[in-house]
Length: 284
Image (spheres, rainbow, N blue to C red):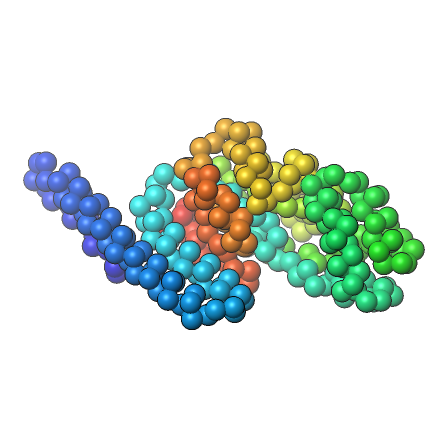
């Protein structure tokens, strides 16, 4: 182990002295290790150059290393857990949307996708600035096909592939010791599908049954990584940034939260969020 255990003696007054010494020593070790990590990062990023895919993986890995070192000291301060949804609590595979539309007869899916991005269809829908009907009409226009509402919804929901029961059970356990929040960039079609899956898989009326409170971009009219959505969540939930631990699979979202004083972990899809916890609490 990197850190020395705190020694407890039976002599009056000595435990406090030893505790102060150990906290100081641990803090010094954290500074040394973080300096080493920063040095490695600067050297390695220069070596990687334009390899943005490797830069993304490496920087998020080092970011988590630095945070997990700090978590040793601050985990007792955490009262609130904030989870992203897709790629963290549930498994998503966005490429399947393109596959589904192709199977329905849409040609040149990549160009259709680019057109939808240029028109702001996805962002506007996630911010709740357009209705589901307007979103579907927009997709019909860029695809050039008169697809039925049901076809569009089925293709759009195809990216949502798994609702692992172990993760929802983890959320239940964590809720016994923390306030557990959900903060998700999503939209009305997906939201309705989430609740349908909750009823089918878990017998719950809606997704909100698992969390202390849920915050959805399309209902809040704002999305991550805009600082406003984090500020609104903090204000609505009446929580303090320094008492929050936020888990998201996108580094830019974690970085935005950090700027506001929220502690964060960049989660890698394919791994399990259970690794950060044990017996319903943050792991040492």
